[in-house]
Length: 391
Image (cartoon, rainbow, N blue to C red):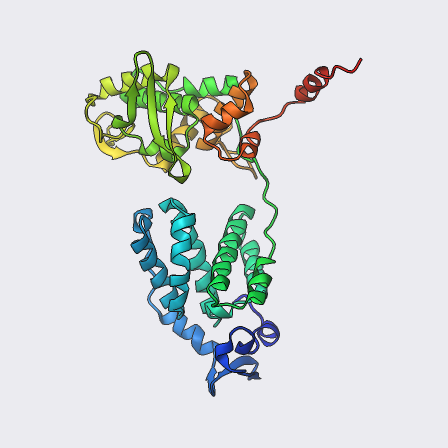
């Protein structure tokens, strides 16, 4: 357990500090452990811990389990029934469904909340009795467990957001909400994804052997990455029916982050995509077929399964190593699918594209996100100085 006895004595005091319904209940220490008195009843944290351990575990959710409001309500309902607070789920469902349209984001939110609520239950703290100090100790526990700063920051953001909703619904007093909101997140380094120079990107692009079906698919996939600057999930979910043709050009319609629909020009990557489709025998009118299908174990037989994001990451790392690039970097993030997106956006900026144009291409709602992709060089400072016309 993360909390010492002294923490229980000092911080887990009267329930009346948290809720008027506890009618001035008092607390006292018995045998070194806190005993809460609520309407004459005592609560022994050791018994609560035993009950928490004896409960059956919650089911592991998939993203499809959270794709509409009824499923979200069911998942959060199970989570808080497990913790003994049925009102909590009702307070969160409308906000989650409105603020997080993506089922992937909802799953990440649910998993972070599940970890926090589960930990609080294990030490005998119910959701509406959580204080800022509980959250601070939980933050320290994540640090000690070796969680990355970005992971900790996301978990704390979820906790702060949940308790803001509890405060708005009158379930938790605002002074406790404010204390929880005051818990700071660790500093998260931005733009840590390693990029690729133009020469490195070209080496990676041409690493697959296009004389084989596998190589033909992987070359087309990498080319689409570099020409559309899509995120991995959009590429993985693309279907043949998402291809569109005008008189002269081919486009790929993708669903990006936040369910945004974007029409991306394929440009020079179009012939590679068409060559792949022709070689594997996918008909142009087979709209539901994956654009980049997984192959059977013989590497020649086509399946009707989409490539997973993990499979695409493995493809990128495989050809990065073949191209002589450092796919893994000690103590830092290695090359990943996002490296291709970063390389594409940076290359467009280096060749004269305006920041606003790249923002539209990337699908960023905030231009500061686009600016974070740009990999600065020592020559940038000199180039800026030469624009100065003071003589």
